[in-house]
Every structure is written in structure tokens, then in C-alpha cells.
Image (cartoon, rainbow, N blue to C red; front, side, top):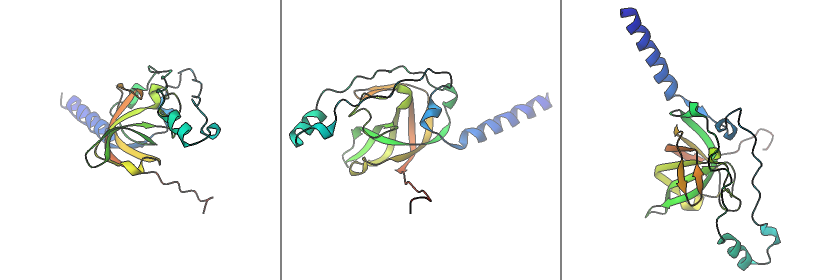
Length: 179
């Protein structure tokens, strides 16, 4: 009985240690390996083809594009892991200090706005206690937090994952080839 207890304690310790590690994800890691490939989204409008600022504003305020894959398959094994994931912010809630406290993290700029929302397994609903400054939302960010496999519905699309942000900070592209 004592040996069984020691084995259980050891397994729990290893599991707890693994769950606490930060795992850097790529967006393709959030799609099951056996999932069929989905076609990329296409833009609703080409801003280069618009005549002036009035046309651009009209296109921006048009109806939201409908999400084509709101129930895309997810990777159940990611549930509960602490992850680091790069992406772009689509604001949902802005506090009284002009900080974005709830947002969707998406793999490319303009997702959910200029094109139909990505498949749900390519969108993460994020709650951030400290928020992100509104003026900084145009650039990519790193999200660090515990990932959950759960959907969240918003006007911008349905997600396959959610996260409570531990940290949200600017993604800095640093390549030895570009200096």
C-alpha cells in the first residue's frame, strides 16, 4: 500500500510540474492532426480598390462577415496547459481607462473585421485583468496564460478556446538576417 501511495504522489507531482510549464504554441498546434484542411478566408473588400476615405469607412462599418467554421475541431489535450501564443487583438470590452480587458486573439491582422472570422479553433477568447492599451492594438502580441478548451460566442465569431491572461505583451520580431 505504501508503494502505491508513493507512485500516486510521484505521478501527481510530475503532472503538476508539467501543467505549470509554459508551452509555446503555434496556431497549427490548435488544430487536430487528423482534421481536414480548411480553405483560407478571403477578404470582403479590397481597400486598394476604394476611391476615398468615405468608401473605406463605409466598408469598415458594413455588416460583420459570417464565420464559416464555428465548430471546427479542437485539441482536447491542450486544456489546462499554460501556453504562450502570438496573435492579434480583436477588442470586445474596453474599460473606463481605455484598456481592452476582453478580446479575441487571432492568428493574423484583420481577422474578424476585414475577412470572415477564422475557424473557431483559430480564435482564443481572452480575459485580461490589466488589459491592453487601446492605442496599441494594431500590432502583434504574445499571450501567456492557461488555455481552456471551451467555446465563447461573440458578435465577432465563436471561439474554440479561452484563456485567462497572465501576461499580454508586444511581440518583437527579431531576426539575425534583419539588422
